[in-house]
Amino acid sequence: MNAFLFVVFLAARAFAGGSSGWSGGDALLASTQTWTGNNTFNGGLVTVGNQGLTVNGTATATAFSGPLSGSATSLAANGANCSAGSFPLGVDTSGAVESCTAASLADPVYTSSASAVGFTFNTVATLVRITDTSAARAVTIATAQNTAGRIIILKDEGGSAGTNNITITPQSGNIDGQANVKIVVNYGVARLYTNGTDWFTW
Image 1 (spheres, rainbow, N blue to C red):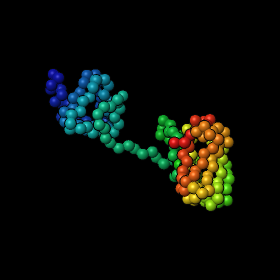
Image 2: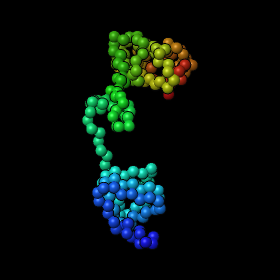
Image 3: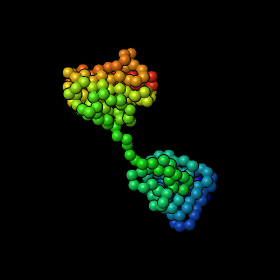
Image 4: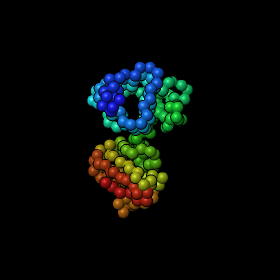
């Protein structure tokens, strides 16, 4: 059978059930093809025309190119799967999760009220809300916060920092080369980051 006739023959044939194989050479599929069962093509290149290819069963290949579409089989529910509110850190070769972690975020806001006239900041929060500035406030940044890339934003939410300044002082290092910085305008804000040693405004 010459190559042209073989291509026409392959383009018109549909495999149903069982397994089939193709070894060596290239196959050109010029029209819609449907395989059911397990099919393996060993060697060569299978080219699918614009009519598409449907596989009902298992298709195995070392690589695919071009647009692909289809559906995935979901993992069966079992004791190894993560519970609601958590997600897997990895899966094993069978698809079962190896370990889970809670899908929760640390509170990103630290709130200072009137009772905290002076306080040391040492939490995971990024935003520090100073809600009462009816008196001057002093904020000390703990040395433990000096981790390169750490960002802290301090906000006068009380709205009176123009009269009652908020003084921000790190336990270790300086801020822009100074021992401290102050928020001196009503509803002002101080944005800080650290290189691990000193702090800088931005």
